[in-house]
Length: 285
Image (cartoon, rainbow, N blue to C red; front, side, top):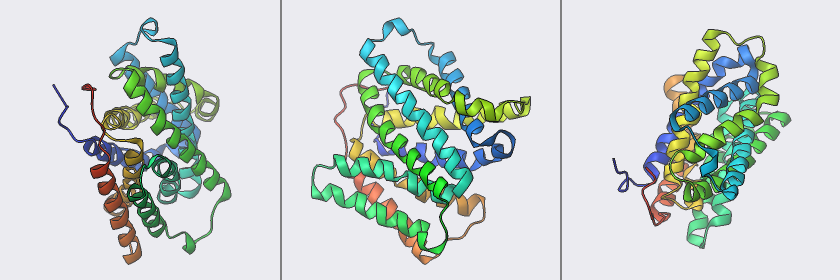
């Protein structure tokens, strides 16, 4: 089945929606295995799924490709584990906007004209309006973890596009996710040890399908069709979708300022997608 005619923004938005839903559901595991254990179990589940589906043969990879994929795996581990600790300390609604500073920085640094730079700026203003940081106190460690997640996300965007251009299909994910799982074991296993019941493992496996399996596949496809600047700005939809999940699933409310911020990030994301197509040499399916 060909996917050549699918615009890059469609899989990107789908990945964001699934990611935010998984992030909300993941908090159920925190009391059982902790934030580090939760992130680790999701990566382990994702690694097992990719290894079974793809069955990668390391001898078919070039040395430079394996090095790139290992770095991408480390960036994925940093992004995943730091995000879990940040959500545990400061909550999802504040973590996601801070983490967005990573792709926002990618968008600003990779923009090729002033017209492109205005979209990350608009998205940043929208994120500030959504989070309303002037209304409460800040947990310093939570912010630090969120900033580390932002760094991991920025590296992930850049390295994923390179991997998508160099390694075909799901081969890249079949290496990077196991690397991320192994790298995060030192933090996740001690937290989860002694609490790995069948129910916990089954729930973690289900969450692994939602994150990282499906979203990472969609993002890999999206980055074949969007520039890193446009993809980074499009990720502004993460805080917006997080707010929407909060309203529909958790009964949260948004005031007029937050609604204005939501409109701003959506507008910036749509504009970035419209101005950031890549030329496609081959079908990544």
